[in-house]
Length: 111
Length: 113
Image 1 (cartoon, rainbow over the protein chains, first blue to last red):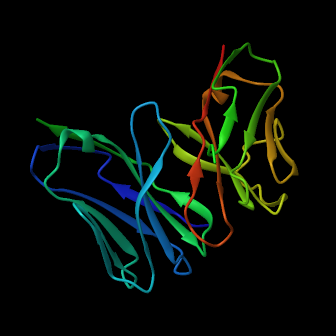
Image 2 (cartoon, one colour):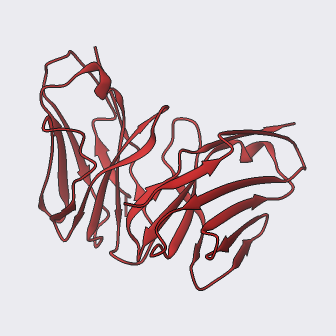
């Protein structure tokens, strides 16, 4: 099956700085790559996603890039704010089925 | 829609007892997933149903775990007998097959003493 690796496992940044989280996947058939944010004690929620026919997608302060050749994708958060502090999970999926998640990155934004 | 509904939210039980976790997916969604979350292993896919049929149960850890989906609006995950290493948060999630976005329930936090 698919294997998704995520780095780093923890990340601390100063408020206003950028944060980058990277993931790699193993199955070249994967074509959908969502990112989920999980606040402490809450459910994971989708924040942005990208499909394999797109190289980059932006939504305000959040962007995701995808390199299909290298089988890696990244989440970029600019102008970080304390409310961005959470655990972020990347995932890879084939046609929206059988989502495989990375192990998560705990992001702390220091005011 | 109220979203994916899971029960119980918290369960504390003793080793050897049977545990049943319940899930009601979002109306109209035809794919349902059970995940287990621990600090060590992150989010692990246990089983995935499409149109009430189990498609992939390769993530189910062992025979003590079983899952059913008798109809489109209800699924159960059963652990019998439970063991302390089963302690985790169990999430149910649903989606409309092939569209992408997974919607998670609030999770069921299981503690086995």
